Image: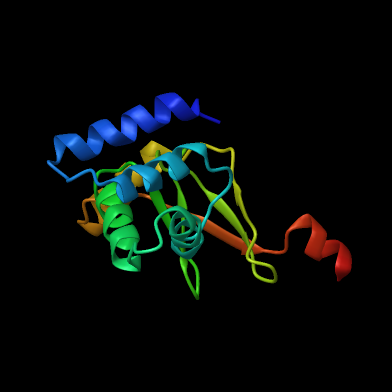
Length: 145
């Protein structure tokens, strides 16, 4: 995992470069992203921040996460009920998602840049954010089966 202090500074710098207003609520969200382990959902971030800042709106959380995603500082993993975010490894990498419990694990294989470039060439697309998700059963759910 990236050093949380270093990651916090990176995220704050990215927001400042975009002239994004850094309210105490947004700074708290950035802190939570920097110290997060795993892949918290936007709702989980909201619930944590709400304890310290009861008047925060969900829109503040979603707007800040959307900007960080646009700045390639977080990866969004879209699940059925809520998006989850990987703020410590913003570079593209595969995710393994359990279809039973929704657990998300990082795949420790780099994405093949040559294949991505070939796909761009044959499709005509410019790929901005390559992301691959594999769906299956995590070790715990596999055992229950």
